[in-house]
Length: 326
Image (tube, rainbow, N blue to C red):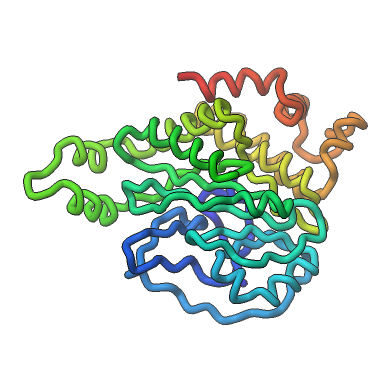
């Protein structure tokens, strides 16, 4: 187990990974590394990691992949039994046959990556079995340049709903030049393709990624899909605390994308981190009118948090309207 720093910590607030990154199949299907948000192919070398079977002294939020969940089943049960939370990323069509029984709600969460077929991704497998076992299961949408990108995002959210996902996390993935050249060479043909060239090499990828995140939110609203991770919870951080913190960091990112350097997102991020560190139940604090005891909950942050967690109200409604505006 090693410490990680996800490239999008506002969307994936995890601290450690058990086992190596996923392995791609030799049939050309790619897999997604959610830590670095890049595509892996079967030709990519996998790092060799020393096995560490020692339990952490305090509960951690751990990411691992499906094959690791199968291979490290005994240690995974010990890890969950000691209070750590795990996010299991499914690497292919086959789900891990057995996951440890959580000791607290939301301690085990399943995430299935969705990668556009244009980039070599495979269709989503059904997640209904996890819902039947009371294990939250959702989809990580990997957003990148594709033909008709907005329609593709809407189709992806609909596919996630039909697969039985309970939530969606939309996140841009890295498209380095070598990946773009590989796709172009495989699809353009000998005569070239001007539209494809413009898409892959002359598009403002950062701006497109931000617009695709907003389109994913519009689609989630239309299909009734929740956004943000609902866990993993730990024995110290209950699920309501993690979920409330994840909502604030999600909106911290969105305000940064909307407002740039003048964003108030840093205030939400600071309060979310303090709430997560406290382990306090935010709903109990709201009921007691005691949110201000958590560092960072200024009057504006408290008003935003109450309205975001409560389903509407100022100032959250104004931020939501700006985010989903066409």
